[in-house]
Image (tube, rainbow, N blue to C red; front, side):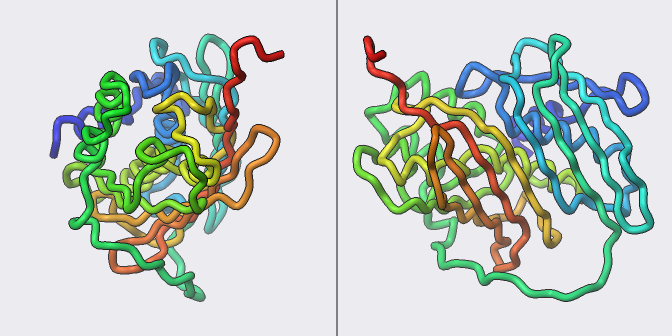
Length: 293
């Protein structure tokens, strides 16, 4: 296991300070606020620790309410909404400086037999044939070296490989609002289903709005031609998977309007099983020109 992955696992390992109350710490992100994927993953950890181990997570729905302060701890309070025969529901509120910054509802279900079908996996090259994230980032002379190092730092725990040029690599002309990324953790994980779901949740917030940027030829936060933040995030966990094995993140944007952009995606295992569906809406705004009213 890489040191970066161990550091991430330590970050996600919350301190329990009271029954159903947990405390997490943060680290800086590419932008000067807590990375949304970190808050979502930590909230899911808090919820999962109040649920029997035989009930894996099957969905989460979340709202990002305020920017998180990376210099302050985050307190997660879990409400035990329901414990049924098949389903368990939890609500988590994340608080900093006395104010809620994030709200999560998560549902867990016992394993059951049932109907089975899925949308087929789209075509995609073998991840082993693609440049690593570091190879891509260090090849872009137009990016601020400080930004490059920050990207490499925050993504060091994950081997994340774009199939095509990311928004910050090639911009200025609109492209198809579709992006594919292969990812896996940089090291093996324990055989804990919640841990794999939590790591996928963490990574899911890294690239989902890329397709919004592609549709408008924008390079994104890495080059400063948009400002934005996640607004809400939903995930459905369909089938078992491992976050330390290759997963294809197939992303597209059906709409952008009113300063908001919508991204939707499917995550497949390398052997073609649909593991996760993800939908996120975020603020995506073009900075005003100096002196504009």
